[in-house]
Amino acid sequence: MDIKDEKILRKIISACLNNKSRYQQKLHEALYPIMMPICLRYSKDYDEAQDILQEGFIKIFKSLEKYQFKGSFEGWAKRLFVNNAIDYIRKKKEYTISLDETNEYLIADEKIEENTDEDFTQIKAKEILLAIQQLSPMYRMTFNMHILEGMTHKEIAEKLNISEGTSKSNLSRARKKIREILLEK
Image 1 (cartoon, rainbow, N blue to C red):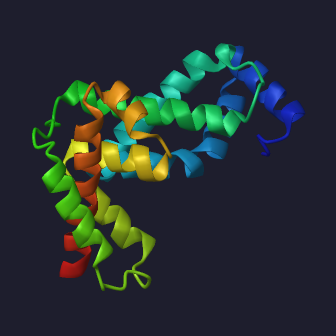
Image 2 (cartoon, rainbow, N blue to C red):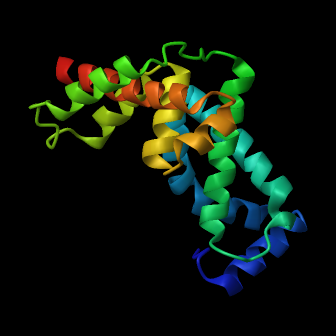
């Protein structure tokens, strides 16, 4: 079912708001292949991703009445799932905030990144996903929010209640850790 067609989308949302399980299933089937990769990127493993996905769909169905048909429904749903993933990880309180915010560290790490000769072009997406999942929750969130969601360090800092320097440091360390994990393979 094409949820990009506004007429079809309006019909699906209306039916979902009237608790029509058939249409809820259709919406779930349309969104699942888009949202599961997001959940996998933010989670430490498949089981946690399933939990995040389930909570995300509950929030989608509870929030459908708020969607105003302005902008992309898919974009609206992605934002909801990303926020849900971040909230899920925050609730578990598994993340730690990096305290090392020195400019010397950031500069040194950037030099390492600039002078890297490794060729990562042949690495498969699955290997990268597994490397991302091995990051600490805070590094994983920062990496996903900046690299994959396109958020600025200021936006990340506000969302995670950390400083911009910590966001930059976490991103730098996440990149370094991903590189180390991929080089081990």
